Image (cartoon, rainbow, N blue to C red; front, side, top):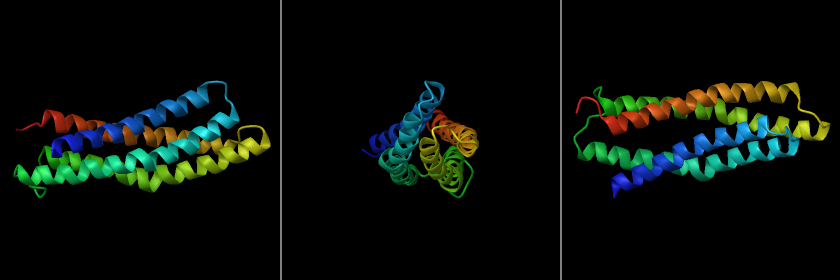
Length: 153
């Protein structure tokens, strides 16, 4: 049951961060409709709370329980701790950089909508989100690879 919950957490977490990038790219490289862009960035934030946060909990709680049951020490360097470090870095990146950028993207996309054209402020924040979001997606993907591969076992 713990493994099922952790896999479900990985699906929710990774599925949401990958699809968020997909929808943002679709909004930006499609017709450049300001309302579509605004709704997309608002819904990315909503999806983080609906899917990413539960995914994080389902990854961490059952994951720690399974690591304990299988005798892995979080105090020594192994694939579990490496995976946890990468996942934690992704979390710090999300909390410290991506969430504030998302809030600014919502605010600036709303301003762009009012003005009838995409503002430079929105474009700048959006580019930063793309860069940090890519890093924030790669880190947990590497973590997933470690969880499946389990090097050193």
